[in-house]
Length: 190
Image (cartoon, rainbow, N blue to C red; front, side, top):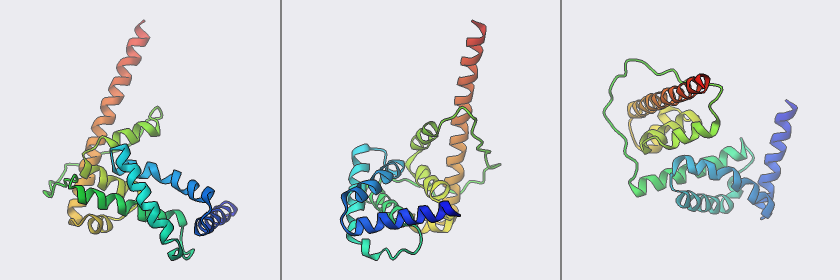
């Protein structure tokens, strides 16, 4: 409980610092959001541009943040919305609308040897539609209804895209596991 209070105080201080134009506060919050942009936008320079534009909005609208809820959550919404807006404008986001019933939901259990960076790399390699839905649902915590509204698609399409993303991730995880097993066997035979 004490940790939550401390985190809340820190967020309030960051919000107040941003409100007052404090460069240290502004820099602190910017650093957290670049990786968020990179999860949606594959090109580094585009991700940086979107983050900068999102922060211009955040700093311009900082007075709209009233302290209800998380400051970071409020910022994340703006950054994610800007990423989605960019994807829609660039028309790079292709979402399959056919809804195929998959036999079973894949079991995504990560092995101990898989690093966070490895998983984020696998997610980044997903087709853009799958990646966007996966990020919104599995990482950002949006419901399928919220994903559908944000992307202007049907809820069933959101579910289908998530399921397909999970299948692709599961296949890639198995492939990586097989590579590790082959390397381990080769090492043991030497």
